[in-house]
Amino acid sequence: MIRDITLGQYYKKDSIVHSLDPRVKLVATLVFLVSLFISTNIFAYLFATIFLIIAIYMCRVPFKFIIRGLKSLLILLLISIFFNLFLTPGKIVLSLGIFKITKEGIIIAIKMAIRLIYLVIGSSILTLTTTPSKLTDGLEKGLSFLKVFKVPVAEIALMMSIALRFIPILIEEVDKIMNAQMSRGADFEHGNIIEKAKSLIPLLIPLFVSAFKRANDLAYAMESRCYSSDAIRTKLRPLKYKKIDYMTYAYLLLYIILIFLTRYIKIDGIIKFERFL
Amino acid sequence: MENISIKNLIVDFDITNEENEIISKKRVIDDISLSINEGEFICIIGKNGSGKSTFVKCLNALILPSSGDVTIYGMNTKDESNLINIRRNIGMAFQNPDNQIVASIVEEDVAFGMENLGFESEEMDKRIDESLNILGIKDSRYSQTNKLSGGQKQKVSLAGILCLKSKILVLDEPTSMIDKNGRIDLLNKVYELNKNQKITVILISHYIEEIKYADRVLVMNNGKIINDDTPKNTVLKEEILLEAGIELPYITKLSKLLKEKGKNLKGNEFTVKELCQFLK
Image 1: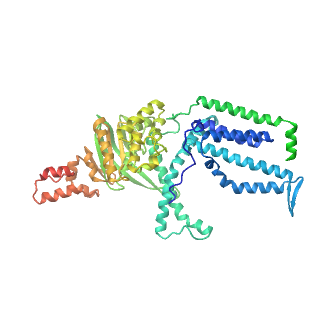
Image 2 (image 1 turned 135 degrees about the horizontal axis):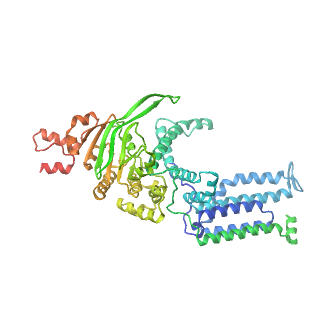
C-alpha cells in the first residue's frame, strides 16, 4: 500500500554534477544559498540566475523534476509575498481599502520570491544528483574537523546511514501492522483529527516495540562483525577529490567574488533602474 | 585440533522488577562443558528457550559467562583485549536477515566488517569479489539490499562474514525466515565451505532435517546439552528427542514404521536417498 515510497529524490543520470564529490556539492549549495541572502542589487541576482541555469543544464535532470519541489513551497511563497506586499511601509502605489501596496513592498516581495524559489531549486539539485548514502559520506568527511571538538562525526554518519537503510523496512512493518489491526476492526480512515490520532496508537506501539527489537538484533550483528566505536574505520569507497572537483571549487570562488563585487557596482543606469523599481 | 573449548559454562540472567532491582536469577545455561575441533560441522537443536542462542552468543563474547570459561583458540572471552581477535575468528549470522544488514548497497554491507578492522580499499574489493563469488551472488553486488529475497539477504550477511576469513562460522537459525529452496541452497553452500575450506560450522536449527549436514548433533534442553552424538545415532534416541520437544524427521518415522513391519531397515534413515537405497 505505502511500500512504493522512494526515499529522497535521487534522479539517476550520468552527468558531471552527479559525478562531483558530495562535499563539493554541499559546499556549492551552501555558497549559493548564502549568496542569495547577501545579494542586494540586480546584478547579484543576475549572477545567481546564471549560476543556477548552468547547474540545471549540467546536471541533465529534466526541468520538471527540478521544479517539482516548488509545489510544496507554493503556500509559503504566497504568504510571504502577501505580507511583504501589503505590510511594508513606504511610498503608496496602490490603495485598496485597508490594503496598501507600497513601492518598497513590491521590491521586497519580488526579492523574497526569487530567493525562496532559487533556494528550493538549488537544494533540489543537490538531492536530485546525490544519493542519500553519498550525502552522509560527504557530511562525515566534510565535518570531520569537528572531531577536534569531540563531536562523534563518524558515529552520527553511521547512525544516519542506518536510519536510511531501515526506513523501507519500517514502512513495510507499518504496512503489516496496519493490515493486522485493520483485520481486527481498527479504523484508520474515519473520524476527526483527534480520533485519527488516537487510532494511530495501536499502530505506533507495536512499531516501536519491533523497532527496539530490531535495534537490539542489529547491535548484536554489528558487534559480531567487530564494530567498536573506538577503532579507526576505513571506507570501501573513500572520498577523493578529482581534478573536476578542484575546478568546481575554483569556479565557486569566482562566483563568490563576483557576488561581493556587485555590492560596489554603481552605474548610473542601474541606479536609475533601481529607482524605477 | 581443538579450537573451541568450554568449561563449566553457566549463564544466569537477572530478572529485575520495575525499580531495576534484581529479584531473582534465571539459569539459562547450566554447566556446559564441551570442546569443538577444527573443521567440524556441529548442529544444535532444541526447542524455543532451550538456551541455544544464548550459548552461541557466549562464543564470541556477546554474552559473558556468569561462571566458567569459554576459550577460542586459546583466547578467553572474559579478557577484553581478546575481543576483536575472537570476533575476527568467529563469524556469526543471525535469524532475521533484515536486522543484520547495515548498509543499503550489497557491497557496502559486505565491506562493513572489513571497514571496522581498517582494511585497505583494494583488499576489500578483492575479498568482496571472492566471497560473493563463493556464494554465487556476484550479480547483485551493486543491488539495494532491501530489494533482495530473504535467501539472498542471508547470503549477503554470510558474505560479510566470509570476507573476514573467519575460521569458525556460527549460524543462529539462519534459515527460519526463508523459503524451502532458499534454505537448501544456503545450507549446501555452508556445507561446501565446511568441506572445502575446513571452516568449523556451528548451526542452530529448529528443522530437524538439517542435522543431515552435521558431523555432531547437540540437543539442548533447559540450558543443558542432553545429547552429543552423530546424526545417525541421535535419531535413534527417541526419548531424548522427545524430552527436548523435538519431533523425529518424517523419513525416520517412516523407516521406523517400515522396520516394525519387518523391512530390512535400521530405523535411523533421514534422507529420501538413504531410504530408497535400503528399499531397493
